[in-house]
Length: 124
Image 1 (spheres, helix red, strand yellow):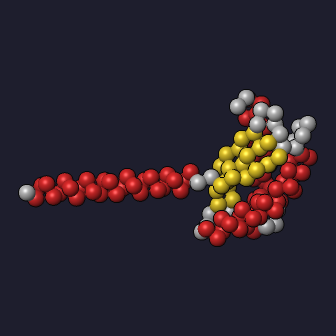
Image 2 (cartoon, helix red, strand yellow; image 1 turned 60 degrees about the vertical axis):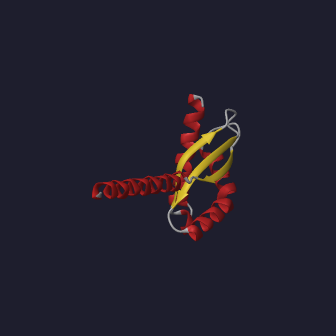
Image 3 (tube, helix red, strand yellow; image 1 turned 90 degrees about the horizontal axis):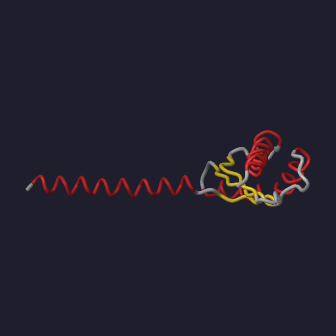
């Protein structure tokens, strides 16, 4: 990504966070965090990766709320950030933290099995 693209992506990310946490009244949007933003080289399409606190139901509700708010977010971004076109925004759930937790769980199980195997050999 070029320096300009990175700056635009970060500016969009910052504005989206301000909208979600301060200017929109939907309480389902309060628990959303934008973890990463990317934008195409032509600055027409932006992808916002997000996480959400809560259970699966809370995540579904957050996804619905984001879908509902996407047009308003795009329109507001178009007014606040001076670009030739307001980028089309797509929100994608970022499951990196969940994947990391799952992998850490696997490592813990392996470590426990090694300890048990080591204790079994020491008893002989």
